[in-house]
Length: 321
Ligand code: ASP
Image 1 (cartoon, rainbow, N blue to C red):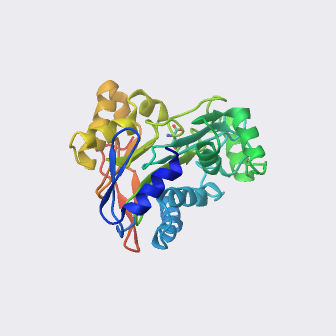
Image 2 (cartoon, helix red, strand yellow):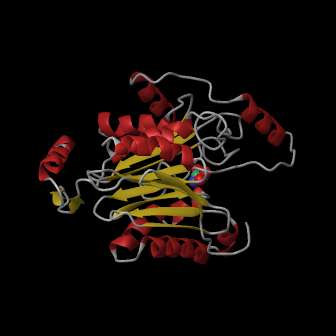
């Protein structure tokens, strides 16, 4: 069965129908569901505004999360995502992104992508126009160019200045990480997830974090729900964070219980993680939301019924890391 056939089944199924999937699972499709978008950090507010507009006119969750995070990718004032992102140790901006469709569970991702402003859009192309899931480095760049993406300089003057200061050994406080991860449910009750990042500032060239790795930086199974992660990608990878959260929800934990259990596992593995801000944001297929971080400071943008709110997220430890 082709992916478009799943969608056809969904469209014909009507209100409250179950859509069958190749894996035997059934994704519930509710017509006229109230759309919802949630995303990470305060830059999520911009993401959600664009994404909710798409959903309100009947657009799909996949289109909504792609467009929403693209708004943040092109914003040079966000120094942790896309254009204007802080570079690696050699002054090169290397971007990671992924997108996952909760109906078909198709995924596309790119890692270590250079010179392309919208890695999430390239990830979508990997999902729809290639037989693969993940393209990296120069191959990802060439794939992007062959699909019409323009090569550009992504290192803004501001980011270059900060990199030069870091290189000269200057002590400075910078936002060294802050991925945008977004989850949405559309009017048809279908879900999707996306995340995109420039990764940790001053990373070793070639370093890839959790964001483009399915099951780590994001996971979305429309039968259950989805999750996105932000923070120390290496730690999220070690516990397959987003997959873990979704599987805990599958076993009956609420989204809040699931994200907290995943963070506690991370802290149990290494107590030092309590002091490093890492966070999960989960959305269950019925619209219930959970979010928490290891240490204080995480925020979640939540948009539903035309309202946009920025929420302070609870943390597992009270001391700021
Ligand atoms: N999780 C991302 C990474 O490790 C960083 C972030 O959240 O900003 O690449």
